[in-house]
Image (cartoon, rainbow, N blue to C red; front, top):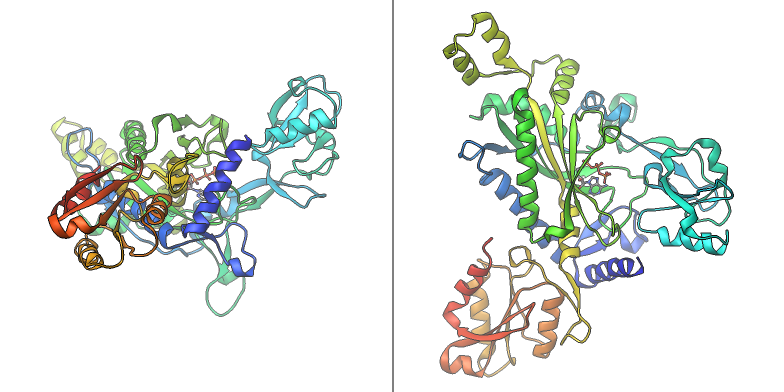
Length: 515
Ligand code: ATP
């Protein structure tokens, strides 16, 4: 446990030191749950974003019929008519149960708090947050003078209120300081226009999905898509999380990559299975190790108000280990959203399925049945993932610390395709004609790959800096380059060096950038 929290500290520190992620408004002391992406962080984030867009929208997967599926992209407003969030259930229900610790003033999501309860029901119980069980065990040994094996680990949500008096909160030593759980709406409120009143109240979207549902009819009427088809969107979402924590894992402003797949109700189950497979493959394509990924079906009691079934794609984060944490949710939303928006807006949001009509005609189905069956509200399968969580996954997956390694012990083994900088280009020394050749190469390649030209410091220091920021290749121009037109290429992970022809650098890098 201590080791995993160390790893996180080291990743956070490297991200700050090298310009991946900074705490937002740092000079004013920061703002809990908000982060800024620095020069390297934005490159990494955009690489993941573009990969998702390419794989979902520009070159979507091949469907069960052997042809590419239908998919279009969209970019909707962050602030929509507030009736949207009434219809979607967010105004009434988008809340987390929350408990306060009266003593430490800490606030926790009640469904995240775990408790070690004495098996014999004698004495205090000890609460902790996932990944911090060791702290509760220490208190048990030190304060209760008992063995942690005498305790059962249960969720706080399973305990009755009359047991709260015996619970020692995660940050306190004496029992009875936790309040009972209270609902807390997660939407950020804002006001539209000059007057701040209930009539001008609006919300920052807590998910990108609703903007897609609101435009279902527009997309059907203005493009050539036919059910089944998908509409995909990437953008910011905002949630006033009770306990933003674990770096960028749970923040109050984050980016989502969501897709709503509209299909015939009879085919929804089949598409749900299809997207499970496709989405797992996508995460593998980022270079995430198989053993660090898993699918977890939601229990019936865990399902959101709109969901018929949901499966999470989870990752083995250093702060959840040995458990896994959510990365993406794939939900079968049935016809909940379109039905709700149809009822609340008074606009028809059903779909007339011409292909189905023809098929039923050929089958000799009665005209009345055809009419009833070819008009329906589509079902929706939704793969919803976090772009900023994907950045965290790539960083956790890539982080290496190898004591004794030359130059720097810490480096990022990011798959070349996603590395913020693909190529470092260095003159061995900043004289004798070398900078001119190196800069010429840099100018030739920078439109194809993000390159960095760096003529300063010792070559070892320059390699080390590139390793730390995950640059997969470095090219060095030396005295021999001027004689035989060859350069040294150094590979980040193995640190192996080889000579290649100067005019082969482009193809060398391009080849290693493919999927
Ligand atoms: P969690 O259980 O972690 O709160 P959720 O089930 O509420 O997540 P969804 O509503 O399914 O999340 O959102 C889809 C995805 O958006 C999540 O899988 C996650 O990757 C991302 N996401 C949700 N909330 C946050 C957040 N506060 N910070 C960063 N990413 C988030």
